[in-house]
Length: 335
Image (cartoon, rainbow, N blue to C red; front, side):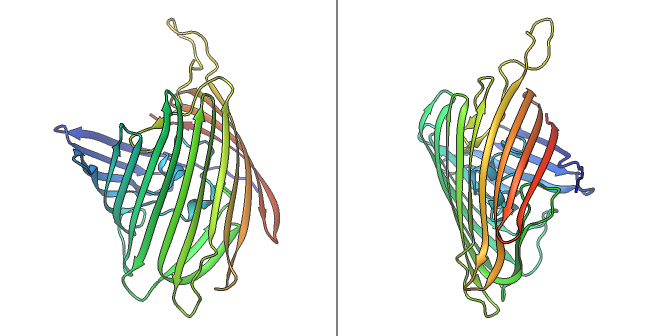
């Protein structure tokens, strides 16, 4: 099988009004519709709370999820992203303390679709995240974090379906629980990362507990995690954003072009590898959605801070079904 797509085609406007009012409106046109991404208004520099936002934006959960898709190491996030709450409509605060060596965030969200609307049955999420950077020196950093989310449904349960692709958006879904009823869901995530010069490592683990309806036993067998390493052979470092406890834009030491005032450069070159595991089986429930292990090798070429070429090779193994291989490339421009 083969294919091609525009993975994202986004336009946004953001800014600040009268010092403390911040806003953003971002839409994605890649699917043929103007889907909501970040659409919010907020206040910052609020004592203790830091920044408060109201609107449609990401819930504070997960290091890779809260790192912009423009800046993640691989073309797609790891398979545990199926668990992560993502964007919903709500209100949240976020603050950085201890000389920006720690952050905390908490929000209340209502489940919403890609247009920012929600329908009955009403699902609400309470989500929070705490991070710390116990070591920070220049571009070097050690990052630790934990996040928790509780979803509850204000009716007699909601239909839930968990399924995932092999970290390629063009591939079909290899693991799938089918539809089942859930009354509430608890998610616990742990995250860690280190950056030392051109080397970085990052990992997360996520566990789900699901209180089911419809006569099924409660589910505690759904879990997953990933670990990745990367290295810049041209000497750059991954950029860490203290305010949010996530990663930021890579800036090459020498851009890939020459002008009258700049030397000819080769941009930044990054080599990376990742292993991820996703388990959607719980024999006591019983729900057998499958287990998937993905191993990904990636090469990233940053021509300049705004242009990147990515190449990924993915070896995906599904227990009881076999192995598939995916080769994919992406050309990315953002400004």
